[in-house]
Every structure is written in C-alpha cells, then in structure tokens.
Length: 387
Image (cartoon, one colour):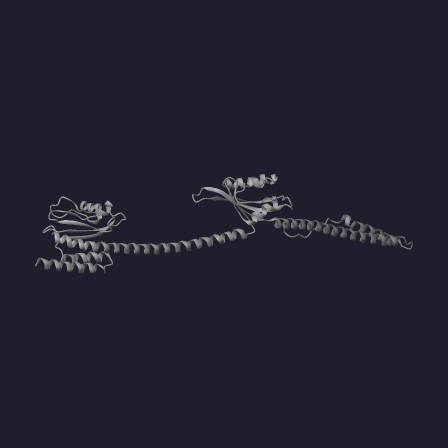
C-alpha cells in the first residue's frame, strides 16, 4: 500500500516536472506549484518569490520575499529562515518533524528565488522531503530559465527605449545643427561687420566681413581670442577712439554712432556702428557685440549733393545779378537815346524857342525817370533742391 502511494506520488512529481517545461512566466509557475503540488504534499501555506536585485542575499530582497512570522509557535521568523537558506545555499527548516522549510532556487552560488512551504498540522515526512527535493531541483532550472527570459526581455525593452532615445536625440541634434548652420550662414553672408568682445576686450566671434575690414584698414589678421588693442597697435590714432567706444559698450551702454576713420591705404571710411550689451543665461553681462555698416558711399554722395546745391545757389545768385544789371543797362540806354535825339534836334538853328524848350524838358524828364531815380527792385533767386 505504501509502495503504491510512493509510485503514485512519484508519477505526480514527474508530471509536475514535465509541466514546468511549458511554463514561461513567474505567475504561471506560481499557479502551477500551488495547484499541482498540493496533490503531492499536504501543506497549509506555499509561497514562491523571485529576488528583485542582482544580489539575492540583500536584506531588502529577503524581507520583501516572504514577510511575516512563521505559523504556530515557532520562534523563528520567515525572514531569518530565508536569510539562512540564501546564506548557506541549502534548504533551511524548522521543527521536528519539519513544519516549515525554505528552498533556495536557481544557481547554487547565486539563488534566484525561494520556495516556502509550511505544514504545521502534520509536518513533512522524509518521503515528502525527498519528493520536494526532486520538485525543487527542476523548479530551480525553470526559475533560472524564466529569470534569463526576464533579463533578455528587459534588455530588449531597454534596447528599444535606448534606440528610441537615440533617434530623438539625433533628431534634436539635426534640428539644432540645422538652426546653427542657418545662423552661421546668415552671420557670414551679411556684408555688415559683426564683432563680439568679452569683458577683457578679446574677440569672442567675428564674421568674414569684420575680418576683411581689419585687413583692409589696418593690415591685421583678426582671429578669435585676439586682443582688440593688439590688433590696432599699428594705428595708434584710431585705437583710442575705437577702444573708447567698446569700453562704453562693455560698461553696459547700448548706443549707435556714426564714425569716420582714416584708413591707411585708402580714403577715409565712414561706418554706422551699433553697440549692444551681451548677457549670459544668468542675465549677467559677459561682453558686448557690434554691427557696423559701411556708409562711406552714402556720406560721399551726401557731401557731393551738398556741394552741388551750394554751386546751384551761387549760380542763381549770379543769374539774379545779371538780370538786375541787364535791366539797369536797358534803362540807361533808353535815357541816353532820348538825350542823344534831343541834343541833335537842339543843334538845328531853325528851331523856335518853344520847340527848343520842349526838347530841353524831354532831356530833363528822361533823366528824372531814369534808373538812378527808380525804386530799388530785389530779384529773388529761384530756390534750389532741398538739402
């Protein structure tokens, strides 16, 4: 009778072990053990837990694995029993006969979980423990397989998340790079001279137009990190004015100024220079930047226009004087014509006194009405173009 029971229990163990081969998750394994192992052994409580951390002997893992006291009057806690099994790598039990037992599952040097069984009423017999040993041997391999699958699944999930993060990061880098390339292209393409100086008057940034300006005006090759006074040491007369403007900007002032410079190898150059304060993320000033527009041609055109307007005004004055003198000359010619005609008539001896007196009065009247006795007329020149 006992032998037949042993064979039946052994067959149940073999069936349970064969069922383990199809188990893929920890929950499924727990359900299988709880339902099928009860057909083989009589126990009141069964718990299966897998360790969380990489170190299965960690206290936090132990306490979270099997919390609470052992059943009945046993004076040792579950935690102490689990800790003993994990420390020794062999089953830890309590009672005689054994009423509670903890099996370490998985690798011998590194358990992956524990199986706790309690049978306070009848305890476990030697035959029960032998069958339980066969079950736990197979159970350890299953738990190792589930643990490895969990690690691989977590690895694939982490790999997928990492790939997604890398893709988002690459996209952001591409967007930022594209934005930076656009700003650099704009910075370099403009014909305005753009310069950025730190608080020590050293170049933090300069575009191609600014580099060409230093080369053309001072024969200096401007580079990032150069000191402004060093770049202008070949033009001491210009250095004081330029450094003075930068000092104002580095002192926190934003302003615009029209400045003329005597270039060494060409005619004077004019620039409209706008200075702004440069601040960091903490709103503290870290330097200043300047944009300079070459206004040389515009200034020259304005001066040429002013010269042309002045010449036009002088021409209009001369024209007015000519008109005035022409009118006076015409009036004098008319007076002289009357005087000449009257004089020639007075020379005639056949004139009677009445007619002679009339010609003399004509001469007097012509002189009286002449330009010398006419009110002065002011001739206004025509207005020239607006300055």
